[in-house]
Length: 422
Image 1: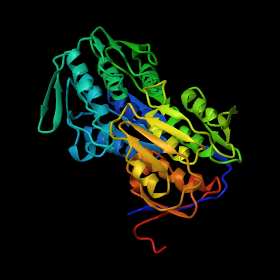
Image 2 (image 1 turned 120 degrees about the vertical axis):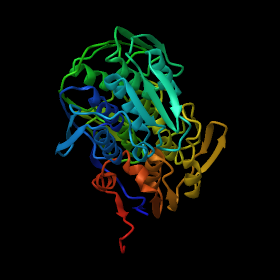
Image 3 (image 1 turned 90 degrees about the horizontal axis):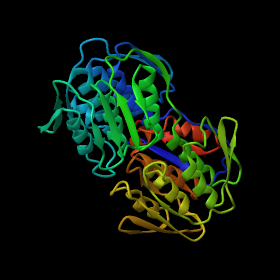
């Protein structure tokens, strides 16, 4: 099993660059199914999930070609299959994003129920109800969601919850629906706006992305486009949290404050100095962070994808902090791993009480999911002694060349592969 080995307690400083947003890239890649021309996407992160999506698209008949590092060409101009392979979809929840585009393009889709990080149920029923509102016939057959339609008709859709995935899937399905579709209680995340901008660049008619009501006027066909993915706000937030734990300033490059207001406000409340600089954000931590309370909420609230990283920092903060998780019901698996490093944490229903300690001690720990893995790396970098992080494949799903970039800040860190003699 691949592990990340960290010698903690080293000073970090310098500049780290944020890559393209995985959570924007995956639905946009799926959206290429809608195009009758060539789609060239740049600022694509080199991640396992992106590779999985390429394999899913290839299996569906989309031609995928890497033009250069971070740039790919996608062409859905041949015969497309309506059925995604189970062996790929089971490994990554975002594979389900192909259902909306397939339904729009082919009027039929058969997608296995998805997998991914084990952080909660995350049902797809919101997606399926939306497809039904557009006129599709939906059923569950042998572990697959099946949707067919003679034609899709625009309709008002009210989401039970502002689900990011459902909003994106329904936006793509509605692009070819006859008439007007309005998605109410829509998710407002920046990745929604990026998908809408991408679809508009191909000729879609979409307004309201980034608000709670998105309107899509159906069109006959979409053409090709050249499009650059936004930077990854969750990766940027992860580096912001890390930088707040060090007194020498760190510049987080290729990101802006626009999508990070809740995160930055909380770190400033905890004592970090944060200011925009050029195309990035400069961070300088205090001698010791103050305690705080966070509650995860849909955007523009505090992001659930940064809850674990904040918890790692709060373990060393002064006083008692509280973290309440409202988005996913099973996103505290990193608590037991932090306790192994000397943290004082108690779970009370959907809230974790964190009593700050003077130091963490390096230990063997596991990345229980993608963002928990990032939290364990952060904890290892500030702990005394050696930390070994297992289940690195989770981290690889969302952070490109993380070890190399942290080493560039002065971290003593390396990957230990299974066949290594180190």
